[in-house]
Length: 94
Image (cartoon, rainbow, N blue to C red):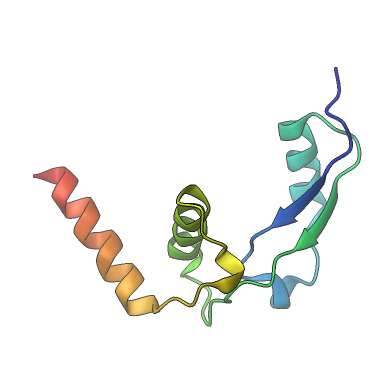
């Protein structure tokens, strides 16, 4: 059974560099949500300024969504995000 054609919002901290999702990413998303046609828009979210911070932006977007906040309205401080993530990881190791 296929998922109905819904419209999805993509939270991508690299979007201005990419303009649109690569075709292999679209194929994987279609498999994940069980559809043949992916309709999406790119969320207007804060963008990373380097090529290595996507992990903290992904976690920040997911955390905002989980707590009912809109990532499109959020502004993040990269150094704080990295420090907070490292502190959280260190706490789980104790």
